[in-house]
Amino acid sequence: MIKELIKEAQQRMQAALDVLEEDLTGIRTGRASPALIEKLPVEYYGATLPLIQMATISVPESRQLLIRPFDASTLKNIERAILASELGLTPNNDGKSIRLNLPPLTEERRRELVRVVHGRLEDCKVSVRNVRRDVIKDLKDFEKEKLISEDELNDAEEELKELTAEMVDKVDEIGSRKEREILEV
Image 1 (tube, one colour):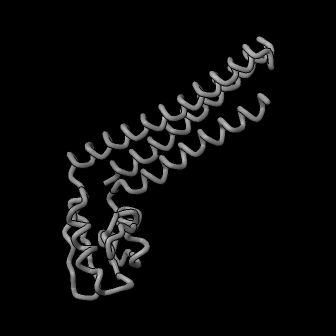
Image 2: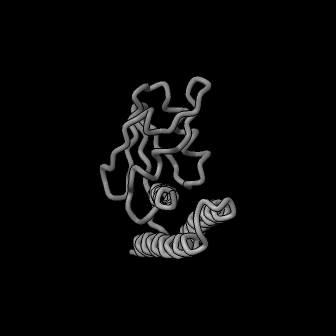
């Protein structure tokens, strides 16, 4: 019973890490990356779809993205979505595709992006700690119901503490890697 709870906690904590990594791919670094715009919501016949489902996205040059819609009639919608986003990019529409030229990041913008990364890291750490809190609450309920002993409760809490520390270290590692990537000129 305790092992299952701890295994579930580990899976939930890992899921929080996976979401963080996916989230950080959308934060711009000095290079062009399709991940920057893949999830951009685009209005399409009354529905909102991520851009990746409506077009192919390629990187013809290190600071340029090329978007080729599957349906040419969606060019205006894609262009509108890019302009409405907080990316600060100006789309160049040639009638068949859209080119996005990524300007080099300024030092001020790099520092701003690092602050955004730190905020997302903290959110992930809070998620990991919330998982620990929920599992400890369940364990204490088990102990009150006499399903586990006090010693088993203490051992499980110690194991959870170690697991949480390990996950928080992974979050810090992911964050420092992304920070280096952003600050790299």
